[in-house]
Image (cartoon, rainbow, N blue to C red):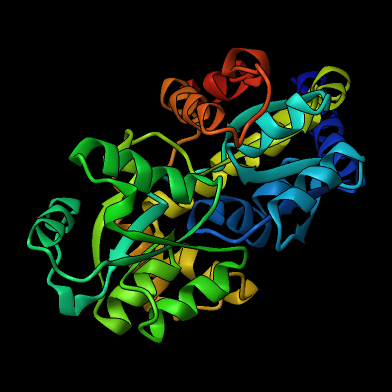
Length: 330
């Protein structure tokens, strides 16, 4: 009995030593480039909550105002992970960058088209009725060659609206787009949450469609990309990063108020907490990370026909979703 006792004590001591040794192991530093949209909340919550730390990662978030700069940083090795609109990996791949998409960023219905409240619109069908009534042309603010433009053109095609019936006002600055709507220079805005949510709550705007309605619930706004070399040579780092995002998604899905507290502490979105909470809780489905690649390909095909994307890269060429699918099944 004494031998068994001391044997158990020895085993416990060894186990405790192993845990302490693991705890002392230095975190692996990685850099994650991003823009700012509600579907990037898992990245920010994972950092603020310790989800990344639990996976052995010290993640430095690097903000980019321009998606192209985000792409370039990944291509040049300045960052390890890039969270960018899903069209950007296609631009990169067609330019010879060995990029791989490993997951959606997290969150659905992030793109919203909002109209000035005074118009009384509740859907894009009301836009069609307005045009048929022969009223003054509506001005639509959007980004050219972006998913924010494509959602409008998809709806125009569905409803038989000619682009001559409206005025598309192109911007290269997301903040300037919002300001143009706030000041009444445009009647309709294609933009992203939580900024559209802020316009709804504080400016009386109405949501007339979302990318979840126009395409599918799991059509993403942004995706997570790495270089092929990273996925090939450091798969454990990619897996740890994705586990961190899955951990954060559980917090957002189950404890949205707690998630908002983390996001507000980091001051990532610079909107009021009530706006952020409304933006998250109004999502059409809980956060997950496997995107609708068929819908993505349809958007890329449209952009190619319009001449915005030049090349033949398909989702099959660059999307590598086996790892995130496996993690979501655990």
